[in-house]
Amino acid sequence: MEKIISEAREMRTKYLASCTGSRQPVAINTKKFATVVEEETGYGVESLVINDMEHLRGMIVRFPQKKAIIFVSDHNNDCWRRFTFIKEISHLFIETTPECFNSDAYEQAKALVDQFQTPDDVSPASEKLLHAEVSGIVAAMEIMIPDELIPYVAHLSNVDKMLPYAIASRLKVPQKYLEYKMRQHGIAINSPSS
Amino acid sequence: MNTKGDFQQWLEDKGAVDVRFFPSNPSESTATELLDSAYKAVKAYESGNCVPYEDPISDDNFTPVD
Image 1 (tube, helix red, strand yellow):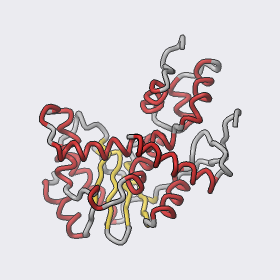
Image 2: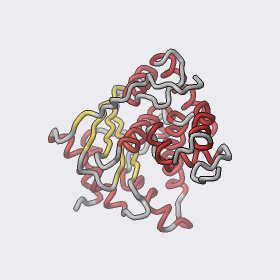
Image 3: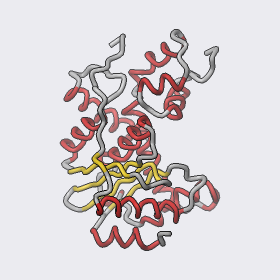
Image 4: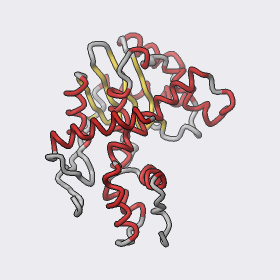
């Protein structure tokens, strides 16, 4: 995953240089981030919010000639919607060669479901598909909750005594991934005594 | 209910080369339900029953220590 993290950081750095004068925002503008990804990858991306995709937070479909459509579910709250969008667009710069592509929808869906239902029976092909999905999530965490924000989040938790949900709302990211990222840094923001 | 083939057929008809899903809750969904949602999404797209993704947030929101 080190390569994924490095690529995500590199793309965030380009976004900051382009949009914030390299200053660190608490929350990025995900649509502007997408513009930077389009410029860097050469993809043309159509981004849509759909109100009838109950079982999916989002989806990306790629076509020849570097066209892509990102679908984001209207069922997501704002934090999840933003995270989903960044996760999906990250696939464009972390999986760049045809060998990484997958156009078998059933295999993809089955791999995602099977990891919970028959974890001992996940095939090597499914493992590859799962790895791609996890890669997108790892990239999104790196882009939306970068290491540079860790001291700020720790301050909000430890000094300002903000609850995890309030901190996540300020960063406009899902609480689940904020807590995960902070745990990676040895900081438990879900504990009132931390 | 979508069958396994509907969304796959759409992908092939459109010449798609790659698809990735982000399930809402994979531990409580079936593969068919994921594909059903995917198919509904593309049909909504084709019928114009969707809106462009926008993010109204200003990126001019810096940390105090920045």
